[in-house]
Amino acid sequence: MSPTEATIWPMIAHVTLVFALYVLLSSRRIGAVRNGTARAEQFRENREEPAESLTVKNAIANQFELPVLFYAVSILLYLVDADNPVTVAGGWLFVALRYAHAWVHVTSNRLRYRRPLFIAGLFVLMALWAWLGVWLAFT
Image 1 (cartoon, rainbow, N blue to C red):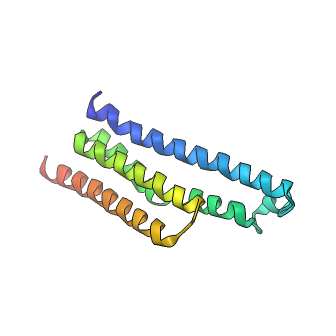
Image 2 (cartoon, one colour; image 1 turned 180 degrees about the vertical axis):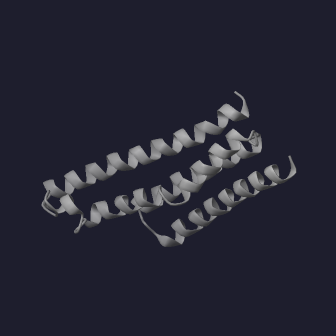
């Protein structure tokens, strides 16, 4: 597999995470309604998210913050042929950190563990953008 093709797979892996989080959110909301901690009407306007699903809802929201920049840089690296095994590894590392961040978010939700994972992903993403800038400046 060429680096160009390999650049796309981390994006697919991240989309899989987002879909899994939506399934988990739905499951937790159904569970909250069934055990009586929520009413189905609460989800119409999402004003009163039950505690058991709030962390998942927030984890999903986090998947549309830094990852937007990840998709942009991945596509740009692909389009300008600046992708290589190092950028592919960076993409996989970023996605692995997003999985770990989401796991912490929907389980213990301990900021002590979540924050370093977020910051590590931020640095990986910054490195990918820096590489793109270097590539464009010198080729």
